[in-house]
Length: 287
Image (cartoon, rainbow, N blue to C red):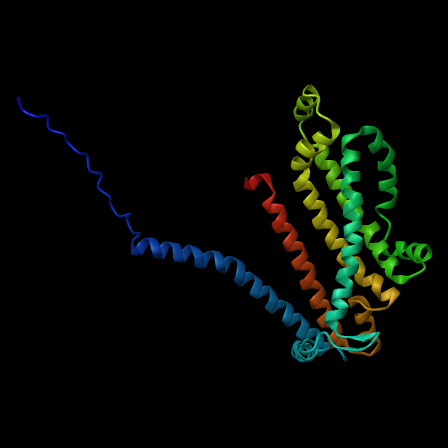
């Protein structure tokens, strides 16, 4: 009798194929093309803006050129956090003061506007009660609310936050309510069959589905809040980027005003882009 022969299967490991030179070249060309499609138009737009700025400076008296504004910016940002008095502070302190006011008014608007949007979108009776009020108050100019804030609070600091609050609350309410209305009725029918409480429906069904709409409203509101604070601070005074611009105008430092305008635009762009990135993160298209 011969003994059985046992065969052993050996798995041969093969090294993964390395991409060839043509593949590397193709990827590099794609990367360069994508960078070119974004960076080159942005550079051209900046060049056009600087050219218009230079022409405007040469055509009018007192308007600074880009190079003169750049020289002034070097001086301003060399020490942006100096303190020489209660109303004489660096541009850094003024910017932080404006951001603090925006955060206060914007935070209060989010605390009130998002729950109000849920209620308006969820219950028809509440929607019918508040929709006429929203339609009446939403078109009012932001600065029209500032005297009301000064009358109510008797101080400029709460009045500025009040103005931001009342102007930035409407996009949050409307976008949240619209998101709640767009939820499929089947979801709510299932919740009714399962006898879920209203709080559970809000937490498990409404909030996850409405989150992209909420973030859209928040993004729109932060733009409005940052737009309003500059005008409000020009009227109320104190420390803030709006007051800093008005003070520089009184001192005829036009190049400093242009620097502040650029800084306001950069901060607003950063705030909006950050919120847009958060909105894309929670969008259902990316899941």
